[in-house]
Image 1 (cartoon, rainbow, N blue to C red):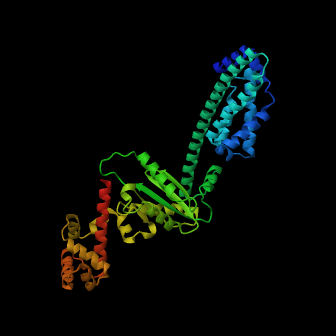
Image 2 (cartoon, helix red, strand yellow):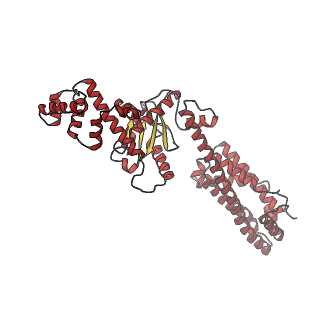
Image 3 (cartoon, rainbow, N blue to C red):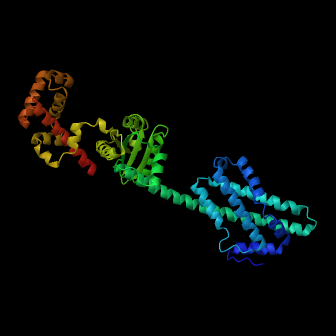
Length: 437
């Protein structure tokens, strides 16, 4: 009887069974023995494959039993020449997709096919080995030996391809859900879809946790070396995921444009805990060059609605980082530095001209140092002299020189604040200009 299928492999197998009627008889007699075959294969698999053992539950047991039944049904149809439809092995793809979705290891399923091959070979060879028509039995054994090898190679290949395709689809789907969840949290909204809510739980972020946001940025390449940015970003994402232990932190790490964002949560003050671990793991002055990146960390927040603030704080802190200070918490940001960092360029016009020239030209360094030290010493001349290692008269002389050149009296609070702020603004402007270059 001809098989109604366009697949040349199925037609070839059917033709071989036509030429080996004893083999056909033995195989078709397996009909109704799916339970026995499944049980034998299932027990072997539980003993030999730890990956499979960890995946076994009631739902999986029912699925594997169903798969075994459909497998036997297709084998009997091939042997008997019955119509199998346009794609008689489509059920293999369906089961592969189910197992991929339920995270059953592929290696366990492929091992199951090897054991099924062994089981089918055993239950068909046994009756033929003692058959009275010896020549016909040997021909059937030879035919079945080739058939079982080819059949399970084909089935395994179909299964592996479908499993890989479904895994790739799931990864893409999870990546989209991951990105969507990060965007929702950083906009201050609770997860909207079932997928993102489940993902939030899987990431260990729970209501009532203290949360913060970190923003990681790569240093610009100033030495002309070509660096694969995609690889560098993936490496940083992997590092941040690894160094923040899931046993202590709930976390989400993802790339957003040229930044890597970390949303972390725990039951204790989280920003300080995150910073402490990151410094230990290389975000320090010594390790900054190797990492090639810096990170800013926002303040602790108690609610998702406050995460946009944490993101802004982390970005502001990141603006003040660099190779010399690769990690900065917003809580540790110097207010004067932050204000000068974000000052309008028009503020540069308020800086005394001599101070600008001295700073840019590298002249009058002793006077610039005196301005800083005098302010740090709370306008105390004696303490300033001690810090600089000079006589008090020298400090007085320098303060008079500063007043003559800038028309600003550093001995007053207002004057000292103006001069120090001017220096901070000049340094910030130079740093920003260097960064742009």
